[in-house]
Image (cartoon, rainbow, N blue to C red; front, top):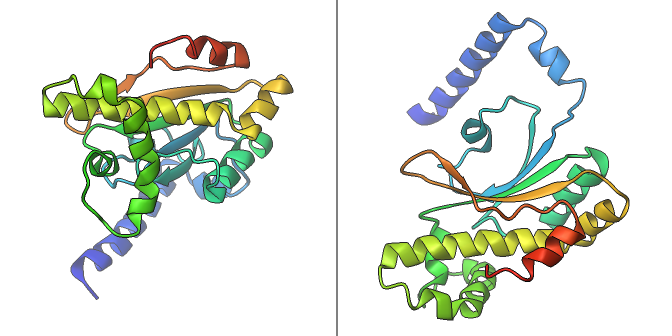
Length: 211
């Protein structure tokens, strides 16, 4: 057994003991069900943990993660999570959170092949193509990279808003707001990109904006 593997097993025991020390009924209460107000759609990057970033407790965040925090209309995994979160758990907020330094977004900026992931990042390359005129005029490479990360998040929030699941919730008058964030790996802070939708009226306003 590797040292790391043994360490994470030991860490679990310490975590359980710590939680029980704080509240003897912690796990019993947790097992009764969940009522999270938030769905987090984030990147699979190991450096972007939803609960730690937001300071939330177990049971407060429903999470879906994939490479480059994508919302793709043919992705049944993402759609299943979204449907359960919106229609069963009745979350009130959905955050799409990208992060500066995202490897998936970086890969989409170049022409190298990375194997099967090439099929996934093809969707991100489309976003680059649609925003090429904005991006090619940014001379600083890191600044251009950061801007592309932000544009990708905005596009994914827009994709999220157009899903039949979100559209159905808004049509039924359900309280549901979508947000776009970017997390700074080198600072720990999140930036709200000010793409916040609570209705189709908000969505229509966005179409008039230069995103």
